Length: 332
Image (cartoon, rainbow, N blue to C red; front, side, top):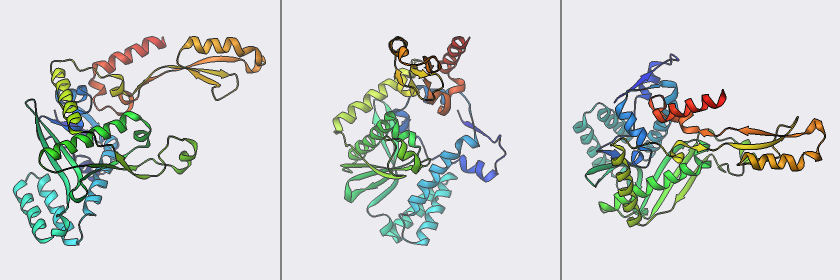
């Protein structure tokens, strides 16, 4: 189903049009990013009309802009840049033949811009009756390398599941390249952390050390990637029959934890994964403090951060609605 873009904050119309531009095309049954993600999101997007506000798509727009500027940075002349922009406009307007003609013109008359580096190269692969598609940001043939730009949040660096997705995505691209005769040995993510702050780097040892980082990704053997792709296709096919609940990793779920606090204090003296362990510490150590600083247990609720803040289908997801109902009952 198409996504309806609303403009509840009355942003200018050029913002609305800009957020309608979507770089993630699916040339087949499933894209690489869909393959490695939760089947439930893909299926609910297809089953329901989803509303998204322009304000909620701003970072997607910024990511598209960063990709475009970096792509233009590959070309050496003003003329080539203008022609590339014209080809993109024609492609966006579905004038594929005209766009292809201009791109061939660039290759002929501006060869330095196109001999070694392949930009926004779309790859396809047939897997168990499905066509898998993906677009690699930058393939450097002389270096046998794929580079992928990520205009992303610091959270993506800190949260291991996000970096795992980067590894899966680039290794799948590498496998797809090799299936058409392009050897790939090196994988790199160029991460631009849009919310990076120097002061937070000093406070958090897990924080990315720089606002822009070139991150080497381990190249996995082709057989391992082939097996992974086939497994993920099977999972998505099973989901077509209605079995597609998201797991904890896909929901970015975290469990409840139990903090031992001192009266008047702002920070926990310790944090436990079970209530029993926290209560035991209070029982054993409370005698060490005066009544004004007595220990007590504070329950810090976990949750599903992606469902709560980032999932585009949360409003039509029965799994999310059931979770919210359960939370309401616990609060009563």
